[in-house]
Length: 152
Image (cartoon, rainbow, N blue to C red):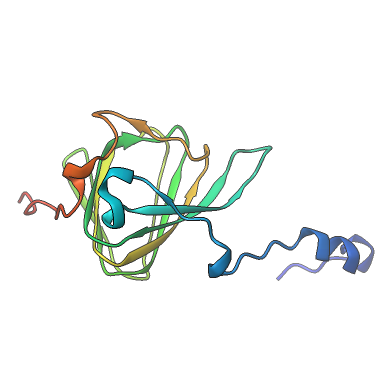
């Protein structure tokens, strides 16, 4: 534990101005595959830092979805809040993030993912909400897509 001298601690007024609070009813959900209608995954941006571009968002999937191969310039973090296991593949290796699990990958890593129905994640994108798609953005063909059988 680190102690901070009282003179360095922020005052109550600056703390209340700095606190950010968003409750579920305040989230602005945006469809990622609008043509999929009610089956489209959705995201809601929680915070985007104007200085660093670090962006925190929630992502939810009403039905299973495949997220095509892509990269991010800087690191990406996933925390599975609800909805079972998420499967990521990168360079022939499979990563399974269980419900309640955490995964961070550095920038530039080519990966794709399969997310189950009813899932919700907290995502932290260090380079902002920017995705470098390698084979096009997800479309209706990616909705209701389950992961392939693991290659062993």
